[in-house]
Length: 285
Image 1 (cartoon, rainbow, N blue to C red):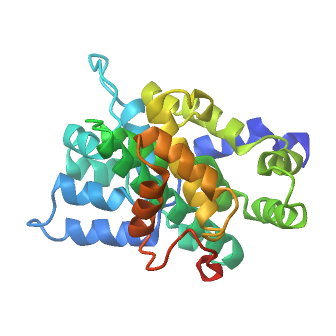
Image 2: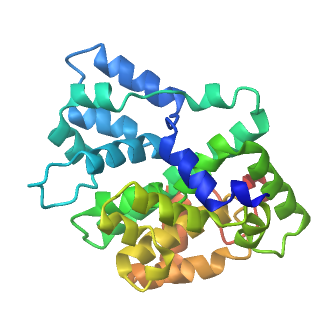
Image 3: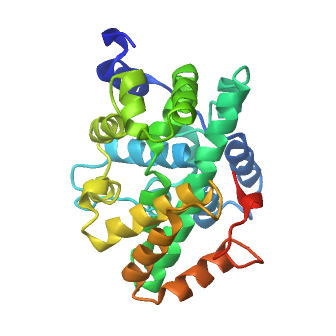
């Protein structure tokens, strides 16, 4: 990758780009907008909650247009909707363009992107559940941090599909090499580095930046996010993935539960009828 298309180049591209959202997000929001009885902040927030790009678009807009007298940072989507009003959200942060249109000629990249978004949503649900178990009154902040944990990777699937496919091919060819090393080889930077700069440029809430930062994993709420992301990444490779036993132990330590109880809890959450202690090749992604 040439120096001209390094980190600064991609930051500039993503800062200026109109970020695309999922078709199902646009459809769901338009259906709510067409029915006054169903059009509520809770209903809109529930749809946005499944789409990391729509979520970051909303938070980015709110941060960049906040009043000078505003002293608290807003992370929760429903709170953002209540502050802005529902109709202004549709006008200022429309659910467009569409991811499916942007990648209509890049089917392999679209499939990878949809899998990545699905993983982000699963991680957000795990993180939220564990935050509730830990009696975290602001569990929604933890959920959003997990949802946006891989937002740079998601965006690059939209805007640099060929390079991202190259990363995937190299990962398969060199399974012992860490993904960040391959990303640096292809792009000249890692997705973590891109995400850090983007989040700062977008002026996202500082609390959110902390919760998304793996280097702050000594903090319980950040550790919650990291463990949720790790669990989903490993389990999508198959419930026999060798990294999962360590994940269970770390989650057990976080939740102060026996490891066996954690395994059973995750099996129930994942809808696995069989015992996840045993290999199950059919669960592979």
